[in-house]
Amino acid sequence: MAQPKKTSNLYRTFISIACAGMLLCGCGSGSENSDPGTPDPDPGTGDNYTPTFDYSKLTDHPRLLMTESDFEELKKTIEISPDLKKIHDYVIAQSDLHLTEEAIPYQMVGKRLTTSLAQKHIMNLAYAYRMTGDSRYLNKAEEDLIAICSFPSWNPSHYLDVAELVLSASFGYDWLYNDLQESTRILIRKAITEFGFQTSYDETDQFIDRVNNWNSICNGGLILGAIALYGDDESMNQECINILERSVAANRFALAEYGPDGNYPEGYGYWCYGNNLQVALIAALEKAFGTDNGLSDIQGFKESAEYMLHMVGVNGKVFNYSDNSEYEQPLLPIWWFARKMNDPSLLYNEIRMLNNGKYVTEKFLPMLLSYATTVDTDKITAPTRTFWHGEGATPVVLIHKDWTLGETDRFLGIKAGKARTGHGHMDAGSFVYDALGCRWAMDLGSQSYTQVEEAGVNLWSMVQNSERWTKVLRIRSDYHNTLTMDLSPFQVDNMCNILETYNSDTEQGAKVDLSGTLGNNYVQSATRTIKLVDSKDLVIHDEVTTAVYGSLRWAMVTPAVPTKISDTCFKLEQNGKTMYMIVESNPEVTLNTWSTDPLYKWDSPNTGTIIVGFDVSVSAGTDVTFNVTLTETPPSGNQF
Image 1: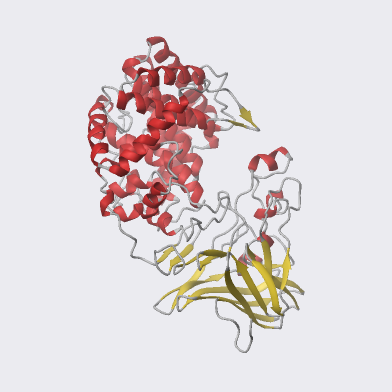
Image 2 (image 1 turned 180 degrees about the vertical axis):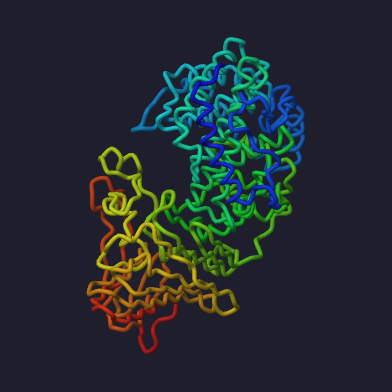
């Protein structure tokens, strides 16, 4: 299919940026992660252009993640691995349910096209057919493929939708290729090229040089589509090459954000969302060409698997900074990391969730099975590290007392960074804390996007005066576990850095600098030190020198019920457990509580939560010190 005329200029602009990006992320000439080849400024049209990949290797279907022999090997593996057999059975059970459901409908919710059914149904059904030969799965998958490829569009104005449907159509096309009707194959190729490839030239600003999950999802879907279609219609081959070469080069922007240590700026849930496609595109390149062109070696990417392992606290709750839920979820890409790094301990949380039934309805389980054939789940052990520290765009410190994930464990997560990052909140200096099997300091988490968007609030502008920071309760600074001055928004572009970390037998934690976050118009300096002391008490020590007269607030969101014992002590209770919050300060303060009830009609409810803390009035040039301790031990001299 002919390429749009404007492509040449688009590529020249893009590649000039991409080459700079390769150098920034350690992938340029002379780096230990040296890039084996760089696409021509005008892929497919320059006289001297040589593709990065050897496309002659794209021969028989199936070729996405698994070949015919891989499927046969997997059949043997699941018979000797009870864990993988359990996952396989989940896919078959889901596929059986799909058989009785209607064809996938075209359904818009706000500005988004519903794509989850396509991703789940088609991959499951295609897998089930390849593993069983039952034609019912083939027929139903073909019905769903025809349905999505007959949609009026794949909603390119929200390009994630396009990418997810390209993925769905590509796996169905590739895994079922030899048994689909020719008319269906033609329809799928037409949809992927017209709804996917062609619209990508007009919508590159949505994803081409993004440093967030959009890059992984959109470029990943397009790469999978190009691998699936190449060679089946010679008139499309050049466009498949162009798409794949462009998207592989662009993908380096996303991977650079994992550096230097692996902590993903957008947090737990978005790591999972983005890496479903990020890992799939890398694995697909490796399977198809024998190389991922250095993508998986970019600093921080493989290390991010351990970051995600350490993000999980006790009782199935995670450190949910930014737009993330507090509940853990199956991390299917972790199985690829465990194989790639030969580290089964990365699956410590996954096996627990698998045994607890949390994998039952997951989509993308066939992807997991393609990664896991050489993973020995009998060798999974608890992690040995109790302290994890990562820098980069969103610095964090993550601490476990032990890895029992029960009442003896303690979990502390500390966040630095700035608000103006992907899905960012005004939560610099915040923390979550688990002890006695409960979460005592929590983050309210993500807000429904659709509710806010439909109310006309400008949710996605991240400039200083954006409504995002003032008109969405869960994003505001004063509804996070941090300090605020006059309840004012943070300075969105000012970084809160980790100044020091502590990791000894008696104390673990970090000191962060909140000076720029609060703003020089409010404070001359502000630091916060958060430590787990003797593996049992949490101590938050704040030192602030003010710049103006105003009110300084110390806040902590909790699901516990507070009882005020004195002006400086709360008794916090939940699930039959007790924790004391004790304050020492200069000047003196009086503890208080504030409601987390919605402020606006679009705010999500925050049932069962409350804010505990205190306000203090300060003059310009005042030195303020707070020392807040969360402990199981009642204050000396008091009986409770």
